[in-house]
Image (cartoon, rainbow, N blue to C red; front, side, top):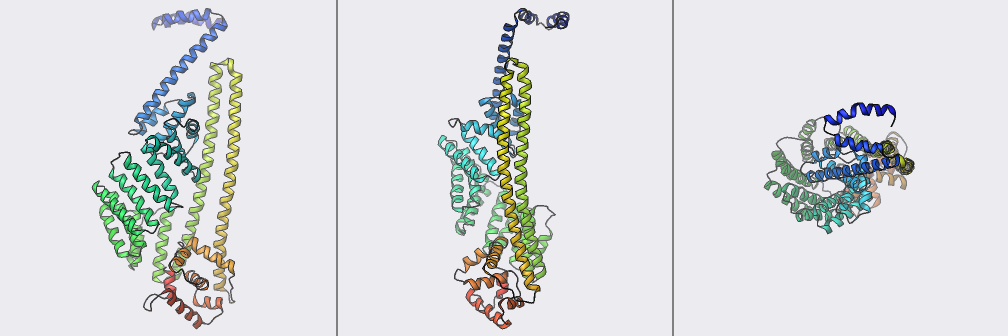
Length: 552
């Protein structure tokens, strides 16, 4: 110590220590000051270790308290965890803190948009599968991967979480993992989705929970899966069970949701009067219109031919920037204009719907890329801040091991940069692949529209080759509600040439256009249409072939 410090110490320390009754501690400090330098450093290091160990115990106790109150008061648990300085945690304490923090975020309704903390817990518990929190770490990592569209990795994590938690008797975690797996499978595999939906309901009941509202929504999910599999009787059966559960809970919102699902089912099965009745019941329980109900009524009235009422419900829709709502509204407007015979409005709605769908696709890809970029920046910023804090704190407390700490931080920073570069390269390749698919999709649409316009305005014959027919078929399948699949399922025996003629009618080719295309006279085209009417089983008093194809 310098002579200036000694003078200050002698002048003020005795007064302060005697005033606050800390004289015994003063004596201890004086004895330490009289020791030789090596012994003094040794004692200071021991004292620092004791303080650190006490601090770790206190932080572990805070984490335990946050875990206990997380189910009932997740916001309070999150506040408790935020009071802990993260950079002071190590090993199992850090992993437990990271997982409990992610769980509290999820319980509070906050999406876990960054895997910086979650990765710490995941990597630790991945090496300790015997720990009771292993299944939870797999579940929350699977949920995060699903949120960032990494479905294969997400499904594998969720499957591990379900298997381990069910074996340990943790049916709640098993139920959560199974329900999330169901959401992944519903996009591509309805058979797997159905099995997972029933398994989720079984696990929910097995954990002893008694909440009719949650049961009703799980049953609705099973009914929706049967509906997508075109098993209508089973779908209605589960909808009715869900309806009874919802009514027993006296929850009008759930009852209204069930009636809405049943209305959509009957609407898609051409039972429009029944669909309208269920929509009215949904409204009676909800008490007021929302966007989904307005669209449902507009669709029902469109299908039964009351176009003015349908338009009134569309006009009642509030202004919204939601692209899904815009697309649904344009589809209904397209049906209304097609039924009223307004060809220009029909084509306008059709083109607008294509623009909105393409915009939705591009927006989704952009959001995914922005999410990956933001997570990468957050992780890099956290690592830099944590490294600077560690260097500052450890260099002051343990000057002897300063060189070792510098080497350790350098290696850690090097690994993080290496991982960041690898992640950036994967993200860049993914972005280029998705943009190329988007460009190809738009080029196909533009090419086909140009062909239609060229044929309608030209005076010469236009001949489509097999590649053109394939593009028309792909265009109708992707942009016209799977027209090709639906039509061939209903008429499997139709010939390829007849189906090509139907596709041209679906695209809006007029009779003069067809005359130029097939180099035939008007009467020949009409005879072809009459023959096709018979093949499709249309009666004389029904719609014309063109009207039937357009409204299919």
